[in-house]
Length: 113
Image (tube, rainbow, N blue to C red; front, side, top):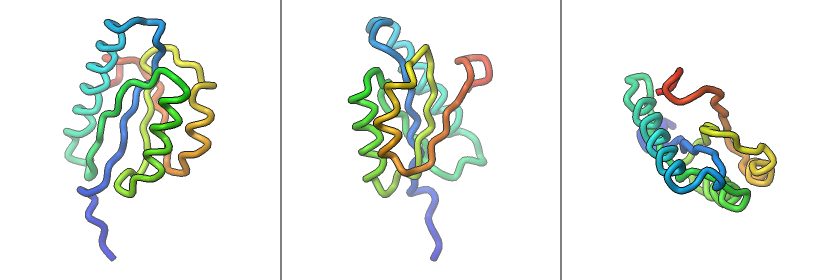
């Protein structure tokens, strides 16, 4: 059986906190989309990379992970902590994910995009 990789998705999600305010979160979203675009443009990337909204709470993270777990086209999540984001917010969601998870450790415009 051959899998059409172009039908698969890798979800790119950025973690932050509400305490930075709406203006900062909008800029974080712009950075997230730019990183997603950079990764997607690689000729070595056979699957679609989908930017997901900036996650700022345990509830939104848990919902995203549950959605990813149910979505048959989603093969995993790449998470990038744009700003300080407490790991505790991710525990419940990641416990339910059961798909590959990659956590990027870098700063925007340093090694990404």
